[in-house]
Length: 207
Image 1 (cartoon, one colour):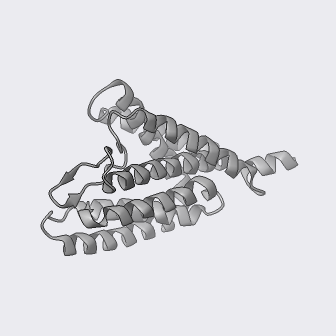
Image 2: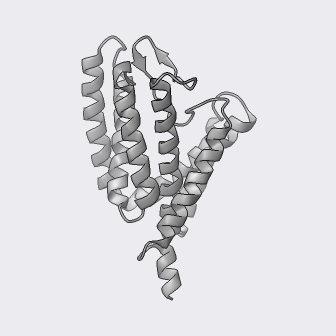
C-alpha cells in the first residue's frame, strides 16, 4: 500500500512496467524479473507498515522492492519456473473470480502453481513469452484501472483513509470487461514477442 497521493504515479509505473513485460519480456527477461521482484517486494514490505506512517511506508516499499528485485535477478535460473508458477496462480485467481466469490482455496493455488512451474520447465522459451505477455498485460490493466480511479472515474480503487491499497490479482471486481482486455492485450503481446528475431517463434521459422 502507498499514500493515496502516490496512486497516480504508481499506476503509471505499473502501466510502463506492464508494457515492457508484455511486449519485450523474452528479450529483457532479467530486467522483467527485476521489475516484478521490485513490485512484489515493495507491496509486501509496505503492507507491513501502519497506515498512519507514510514515510516509513514508502521507505519500507523501497527497501522491500530493491530486495525483491535482487532476489529474483539472482534467482534467474529458477526464474522460468517462477514465471510458470506465477501464471498458474494468476490463472487460478482469474478463473475463480468468474465462478466463485472470495479467494480460491489454497490447494487450487498450489496445484495451479506446481502445474505452471512444470510446464514452464518443459517449454521454457514459449512459457517465458506467453507468461511475460499475459503477466505484463495484467499489469497494464491493473495500472490503467488504478489510474482511472485516481482521476475520479467510477473505477475508484479501494482505500483505507488516505492509503491506496494495491490488489494486483483483483483490479476491478465485478467488471468483466477487465478479463477481455487482459486476454486481448496478452494475445497481442504474445504475437509481438513471437515475431521478434531470436524469439521462440523466430527460431522455429528459421529451422
